[in-house]
Image (cartoon, rainbow, N blue to C red; front, top):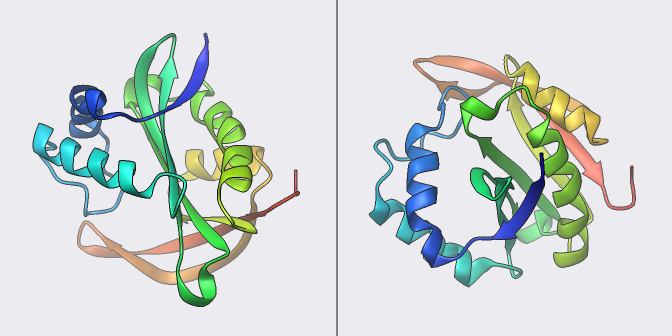
Amino acid sequence: MEIRLEKWSIEDEGALAFLMDRADRQYLSDRLPKPYTLENARWWLEMVSRQEGKTGLFRKILVDGRVVGNISAEGQEDIYRKDAVLGYVLDKEQWGRGIMSQAVALFCPLVFEGLDVLRLSARVMEENIPSCRVLEKNGFRREGVVKMGAWKEGRPHDLWLYGKLKGQN
């Protein structure tokens, strides 16, 4: 199994729309449209082309040449400007194969080399144990808990805060 990260391009709109329309939204932001259309994909890819390398990094995850996921780091502003927030999604048919752990391992050095940041942060719903494991395998440390920090599916969820510092393994 060959896992690669590549920059998104406007030609990927079909693959992105397919991936995101099928995404398991249980732990994802509610800002993700459902259904996820070609128009949504075009909008996002245009935003990515403007922000790439400036305020964020955005990569498609490929397994044996096929798009199976998305990974990104978006820089923060103001006093938080040296921090980028990590986010990712993987086609649920690919879960449990170690793909996301490898993708995060490939991605973190790109972020620290490509963006002017000192840390990567991730916020994970407490129940999302597989995502916590991905982060922990990649040297992220749990730094705290935000009680009732997210509202999803009609109820509050605690968020676990993870961080990885530049130069940290």
